[in-house]
Every structure is written in structure tokens, then in C-alpha cells.
Length: 206
Image (cartoon, rainbow, N blue to C red; front, side, top):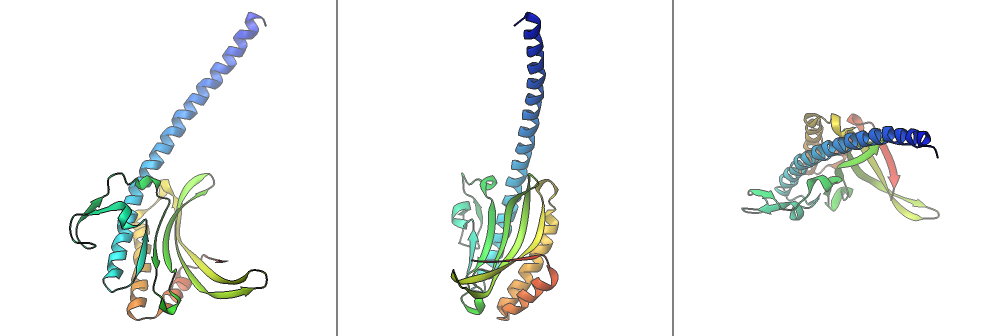
């Protein structure tokens, strides 16, 4: 290969190399910013759902919180209502789903859940808040009995565009009706509220 041909090949790769290095830095910065936002957001949302768990615990309603308070909290005072701080080493950024699940045995409530899940849409990370519940069972010829689930999408947005106040407003609406449905022992009031106000619904069997 002639010196001129070698020079042209080097010039071509040098230009490409600079472009790739620029993209490397840009993407690394974007991912770093997204990781920071996700970590900060998860800390807020985990605390929020722990507060919800404690409110229901006061009226002897059994809920499961995920991630469990055993993994993220160290209690300085009386469990569960006393002061606490974050457990050293707990990585809020690594959490991809936060949920609170009803374990009440009557009225078919087992599995009623408020969920916050990270999903990828159009190659961008989004946060999805949903409420999921079982509406009964159905017999399928080849697979037997399966539970029929409904899931209402309450909120969905890119991480960079999330409005925490809006999340809190929707969460407050759901928790208020959910809580009152337990006080009145009337699960139907919760389901009717969801179907009337949050119409984006998907169904699946499990």
C-alpha cells in the first residue's frame, strides 16, 4: 500500500474514532444522569409506599411491601412507626419494581397491588404506575383453571419528564379509596373507582 493510501485510511479512521469517542462521552453522561434520577426517585417512592404500608398496618390490614423494609431500612426506634434510616449498602438505583400488595384473605383481595415499574419504550426508560387485581377464575380446556387479572395504567412517563407531584396526586387518590374500601369492607367500591376513573386497562390470565 502506498504512503498516500495509508494516510487516507488513517484520516478516515481518525475522524470516525473522534465521532465514536464523542458519542461514548455523551451516552455515558446521559446514562449517569438517568441513574442519578432513578436513584433519587426510587428513594422517594420506596418511602411513599412504606408510609402507605404503615397506614394500613394501623388498621390490621396485611400488606406486603417490595422491596421489603428488611432490605432497605434500619430502625432506630420502635418498629414500624419509629425513626429509621437507609440500610448501608442498599442500592436504590438497582430497584426496578416497587409495589405494595394486599394479602387480605376475604373479598378476593389477595393480589390487589399498586405497582411502580421501570419499562423501556422507544429505547427510553419509562416509569409506569399501575393497579392490578384479580377478577376471578376461568377454566381453559387445555390449561385448566387460571386467574383473570386486570391492570389499570395510572401513570407512565420518561424518567427525564417525570412529575413527582402528579404521581403523588394519583397515588393519593388510589390509596384513599383503597383504604376506605377496607374500612367499609367493600372491595367493589375500589374496583368501580378504578374502572370509572382509569380507563386504560389490560387483562391477562395467570
